[in-house]
Image 1 (spheres, helix red, strand yellow):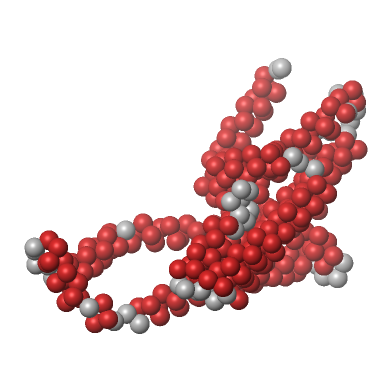
Image 2 (cartoon, rainbow, N blue to C red):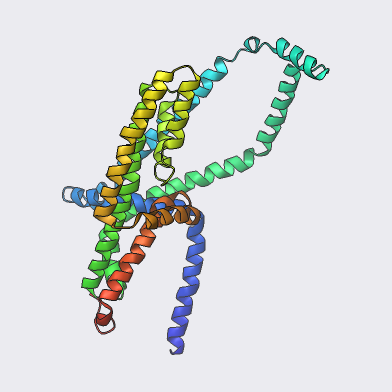
Length: 338
């Protein structure tokens, strides 16, 4: 290797390291943008037959904001409304503070002013909140910047998607046929994980949420959103939520509803996981369930929430690269990419 090549390689490595440092704080948002752009790209191709790439990308970003942000706002508003009702319905007389004070005095022999203690605790909590307000403001600002960055990335990934694909084809030092084979396998893995975990999790969470709503469990919409997230994790799923709901109904003297929700969850909700998930994964990704579990759990630790999706994709891409590389090993080295 001559001096010029060594300098270029060292420069690339240095700039690559600096680029990783720049991206790392917003990695979750970058990965989310890549995933969203990947899902929307087929629609982008269809829209470009009727409008310009910029208009198509802007329309899809607007659709994504409405489709993903609106449900989140509805769930958040439901939770806030429930909290507001609890505060408005709060009645200190109903708590029978005097009775509580007398009972404490009987047990401990000491007089205590519950109202004063509550007021003192409130002042302490207020002090803590005030001290941490600056940190909270910085956190909120960071997430707002991250969301804005993700939306810009989605827009440009959609708008310039064709240019990015052409650049990859020209940059990756593999023959065109091998590149297409590799990209096809990775594409199957992406859609397999997407359908087998994200889509199935949404279906499972919604189906389970219907059971909560029908049986009258409070905040069913909020718990549906929680179940959708939990359903992406194997061996956990929506069981903690609907199991807790069954226990809640039983403890609130609704045994028939508790039994009904239990049977519905085991049979109907269980079917979505037992049949939809293996069908989607086997059809597209063809990954062993153990590999998927390792990818999800390891991805969550390595990449955070987005690792639930990208963890299995990384392992699936490794499998695809090994297959394509071994099958075409003898062809590599003498052929030109193109």
